Image (cartoon, rainbow, N blue to C red; front, side):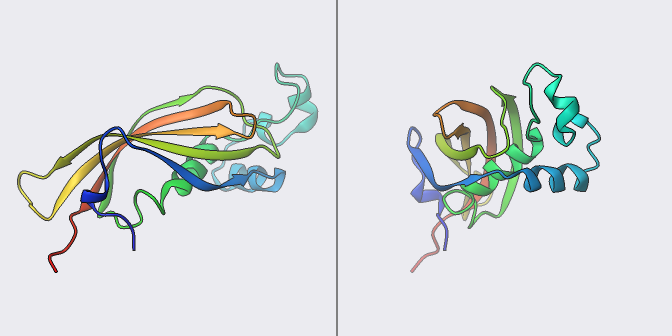
Length: 149
């Protein structure tokens, strides 16, 4: 189950599938669960008066969902997620948008202290159903090497 360090190569791009459509109730529940009180996420009347003219999906929901979309291909076999960095919101996400993800492997570094593992450094991009990039982030994941036969 999952990939090993040897399965990652710098420069490869992994297209994660399937995508996930974010429904209004996903956004409302996530916003309430995280105690985010910004009315842009749950007050349609208020949001209609904003620059976007409608409710926005909570950005941390988009981030969490995008990480989840990558698990099968990146971190299902991981020892640990070590770091998330440079999380950028490139555009808004709205109710009923579908998010897809792709990850580019930036570097694969075997551990110098523990030969049974290494670090995969990657950039993941969240793309909506229109092909627009709405978020990107980089992370480092500690991945085991393939066990000896």
